[in-house]
Image (cartoon, rainbow, N blue to C red):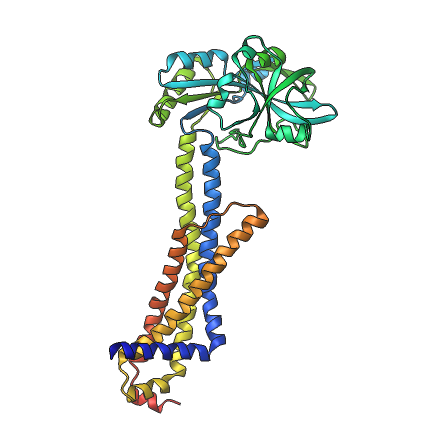
Length: 434
């Protein structure tokens, strides 16, 4: 009997909504757009966060990156007009790190010089990376063709090189790069291998990963990397760079642009970083180096992601709240319009709980329908963003459950007051209502 009364009440509620289809549809729009915004904003935020974390993770969670930076210019040295300024990491630093710190697994020194590379009539701007054969152990690159640098290349200062995929695509087009000779700064190098693109270069001042960009001022920018033996880079390019500005000539001596240190365990990254700071501080009078710990960046990115998700979710939840207030407003108006109907039902024996169930069911039906349509639309928007804007988006199950659950909760919360107000109307006064 009770189930029959409840079923009949629900049917009355559905019939009432169907009789006012336009009003019901307009009322539902607030919930639809609210749920849609929750899913879409969380998907875009999650995609951007995962992309950033993936780029940082590619730097290696057990790696410590030490980069050369130009120290603040000393006023005394500037007044004296020193022609040669020497700063940055040195080969001695790399050797001290390798011999002094027991937890270090691999030490990879690097020289990085932006140069133009020629192959026949084609020219691109690249970053020439002078490094050692075990560079691939600490960098996110894979061998695609041929081989990487070898110990004999280092020992004999061979004129060989390995190019990455972007350089291969721009420079060689449909030609086979293996065995081809390319020209860098007047010298020819034979291509012995092709590797994948690392994709990122941790060169921003704050230590975060950013896309590769040119420091040579060329309009095209740096296309990719060309790897040559470190000994060859030292012999061919030297360690002194000359800069001419405003008629004055200044020379800078930098031995290494970067040293990447890989430790044995993730737990040893931060202690090793502290030891490195002490060790380098003893031999560098000025702060001419910067230590980047990808593990710390990952933790910061995870914390930022949580804050970002909370902010986006809160902004989207406000739209759901506005939609809920709109539903409550419409239901209160509906109660006023149907006062006589409520009085007739009460006079025919309907109980207060029947009236509550009827009006509450109408509100919940509206919000649930809006929640379902909002989920469909919310899943479509991230797909369109990824397709047209090429931005990564990730729809998480928790966002779907959360948005749908909130829409249902709003239906109950904002429908309760109009339902109770309808149920507690005086039947006699309701029958007199016109």
